[in-house]
Structures are given as structure tokens and as C-alpha cells.
Amino acid sequence: MLKVIEVLAESDKSWEDAAANAVKTAAKTVHNIKSIYIENMEATVKDNKITGYRINAKLTFLLDAK
Image (cartoon, rainbow, N blue to C red; front, side, top):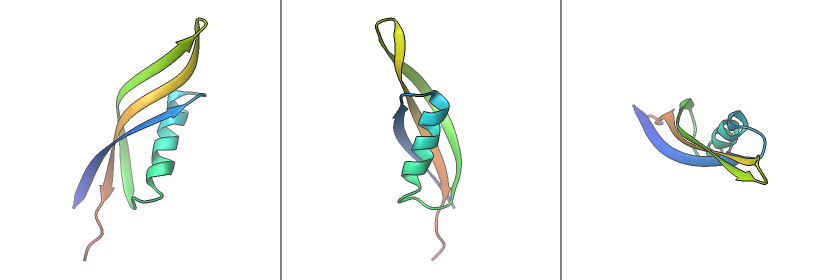
């Protein structure tokens, strides 16, 4: 059985790095992550430059059988 959770993550490098941070952080407590679906991307801007990348994502993982 699969389960989906929604997560928020950010990075000062890129959206790809934000996605990697989401998986890395979630993997500390969620096991068997199978996929990530990026639902929304947003950037923060300061002095006409992008300073932060944020994502809303859904992580799908396999539930442990008991």
C-alpha cells in the first residue's frame, strides 16, 4: 500500500536542490520513498535577484507491511 504526504522545502541554490532537501529530510522519518511530485514552485527576490527557491511537493512512499 502506498501513502502520499505533502511537504514544503527550500534552498538558496535551486528548485532541484529544494527537492533534494525535501527527500533527504523526509527520509529521516519516512522510509521507502518512491517518488516526488513537485506541485508548486516559488522564488523569493531581493534587490532584483532570486535569493531563495521554495517547493510544495507530494512524496509517495510504501507503507511497511505488518
